[in-house]
View: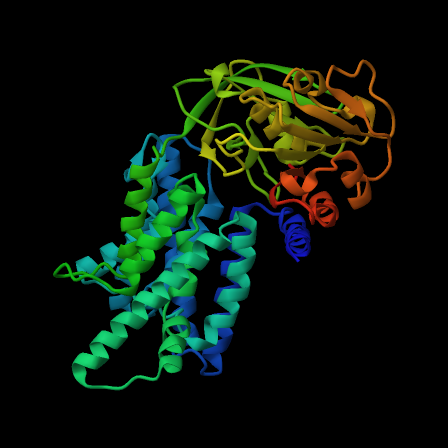
Length: 508
């Protein structure tokens, strides 16, 4: 059952991986705006279509203009997607309107939200969710208010479906599920206490329906709490933030003119995230590039300042370039080097004849050119306690394992390396010195297999072959890294493992 779910998930991720998380979020929000406009025309949403469209137009103009001015002054790349996403989120948070006395407040929310990305920053990273900042300022000034009209039953299913697509792509489903659960429990407790105090009887089913379908919890979790740039890097930290935000949003605390509900609860969570992990961009200057295989290229950077990471984590690297494709100017790369190699940092990528605009831009980076990584992310980290592990790497998916095996005692580790050919077995010699048992599955035998490595032939890796290669699979925690489609194909072979952890490479 677990393997089947993993396979289904990876097939979805393989399709979603064609888009960047920012582009997918933008498309999902545009779809929600279109659905809301249609529903308003048939009376399912208690707003006028003109109010929705006018508000969206004002917010887009405000965020695009503010971002354009700030980006020109600071000489940073244009990020039109970021501007549009901020405007679209605000659309569902503020009270829409087309009257002149409403337009000013709506425009203010857009300007403040966009400006917060450049003012409320620490070492180049914005600390707070921009839309939450804009909505909070709008409420405090009295020029408008946050209505969260997206929390209506008619919008629930579209929010759930589109939100799940975004969460699948950003791998935040468990985090948001915890947030929704905590919010629901705390909200029901609050309603029960308040109803008892007022001498009213409330039916539990109706209460739960009200909490989930007539509140902004689903939208807040899927499109705001899950924002990568305002979340900490480790899973336990993200779960802690989700718990705190869920509790505060479920039982708002009055602070006089405002309460710690909805967007203010999220801002508290953002501040907690900033405390848990230093929110700082990492400046990297290219030192050298080398060919690891005919198609795999390694880049070595020097970090301009110290930073910490655990083997298996990744960097999101920004490479500004003209006319980026649908996935934008950022990509994720597992760190190949170990922490002991700092300040030098190594990443690797696969070059193809029909590379993306990003790959072409990355290939044009010259020594001493400086790029920015948004930070260190990911939970694809081996447990600190030594335990039997099975590592399965498909192609370029070997990169996190190079760092992991280079930084720990690998005596009880088995690495199965799946490659399209012997010459595409990346980092084989480096892995051979780790002490792990290395099993190569490739059509032809690699020349000069290092000590501890063996060739298993070119048969397709399936459940039977995997059990033959690793007879004690049932006592091992399996870690698998590679393209989502291949991970989906290998998932059935891992049914016998004690536990399975995956890391999908969607391609660049």
